[in-house]
Image (cartoon, rainbow, N blue to C red):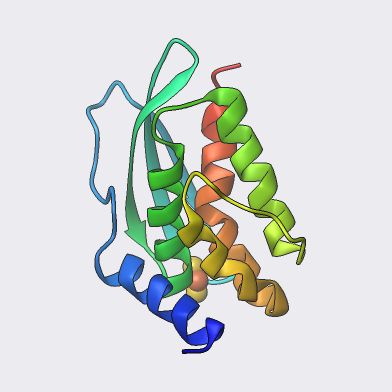
Length: 140
Ligand code: FES
């Protein structure tokens, strides 16, 4: 199997069986963002305690790239400190620039590496990560 096929399968698996789709209670940090190029939107909720993201959920509409990215991100960020969460988001920005970064927190994220060749889709892939950054920044 070619790497592209493997990556496509990983992306479609997260799209069809999203992890952490849903909502947390009203006290959770809530960030609503939309992708200005298509109007799709995401609502990310983070449950934070003592400088850590203890739980994460997302809802909204979007394409397979944006929703699979949100699924992968929420998996990776649970249990991480704010610093670790920002490090994840920074590495994801690097991935979108074609840099060879690794995600030992959730290797599925590397399946989105091919997106960097499609500038219009980078906004789809980064939507959830921008929401994560915004949510953490609000806490600092
Ligand atoms: Fe709207 Fe990808 S086309 S988020």
